[in-house]
Length: 525
Image (cartoon, rainbow, N blue to C red; front, side, top):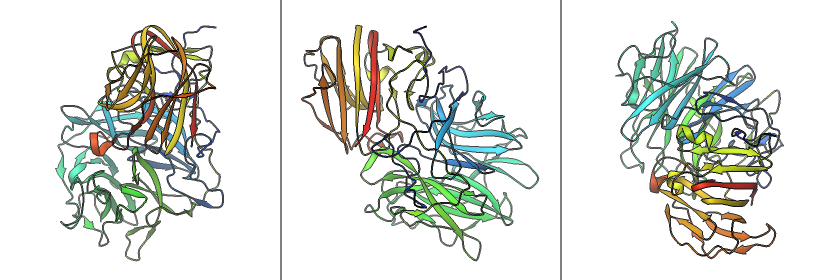
């Protein structure tokens, strides 16, 4: 057996190579149920469902339907591979099937998944330190291979929304109510952005983050183009983010704002879901309309913006009416011909044929893809950098308020590794170890370094009890001793740090040499 294996993504036999633009994920039948696989399950099994439909950090959802199948993607930010594609046949049970983006281009925001003339496209915004821009990737099959990203040269806008008029002319609607014309193949712009829509504005005394018209999504129904937009800012006050609607008989306007705007808004901080917005409306094969959008869970901004589903009906005068109230209670499930499999386990035994569930490098360089070798039920993580802040950890999305992560660690050479909760390179916490000392990570810095009595091989456990963090160590993985350092991490979130991400469980490897990980276990509480 060749011990040197390429990194497999999400436990589904996918080799990671940042130069290869697509990786296909085979189906996995394990559930997403709370307490079993570490994600909350939306399907209640009685004809009802409970939000979220995809728990944890799945913001800016964009959805399409092909026959009886639905496909969805979300913002992936600094995680690579990125732009995961999810599949469902019933709108409430979802399984990842492919990644569309491998080439690191920056922090990926607000994708728009498009099927046009038999081809697939994803338009997405990219945040960089000095400038934003908008890219497009394309494929002949939803599973890929996807093209390398193409920069459309739009440095002053975010949140693209694809639209096609009755003559087949293609456009991108952009933040601020602007629009740009696309080439026939959709891979370049042929004019400069111009403003075509003045968004509805909320009363001045509302508590919002800022006006920020963004996330435009356009669809045609009964002779009208409907433009669905987010305003109010995507975070900040719980009542800020909202959904507004306008319509026009032409993509050139004039646009009439819905008399009932906003059609979605969190009314108070007492609601379960805060900052609800950024909606896409989809029609089912049964003629039902549903909307996916995102929201922060009350008091758990650390989980990121989660993917929510709401029914949509139509008023007598042709305006969409979003149902479900604040989405805190069970709702009638969409009609569907078949029920989908759901979710992925998060534990990982690092077997030869797979790598685990939903592992992604966080803010990697192209060379980081070569740092991980698997085989013999272990993961060898080659050391890089001097701290988690500059070593590209491997993390994953989790949707539970409480959970435990446990792993066996073996230190080689002058390396060190451990378990983290990682927001970004400036904000993380965790417990690391080298051959002689523990390293306590807190507030994105390396603090205490007490003696390590275990030597080069030990077990570490991280417990997250609703943002209260504790650590445990063991020589055998059975008898545990609580580590003398606890933390509270509810402030490790976007409203403190920015960046729109979540606090991810992660493993890392710094220094010189390598860190070996075995039998990673995840348990929701």
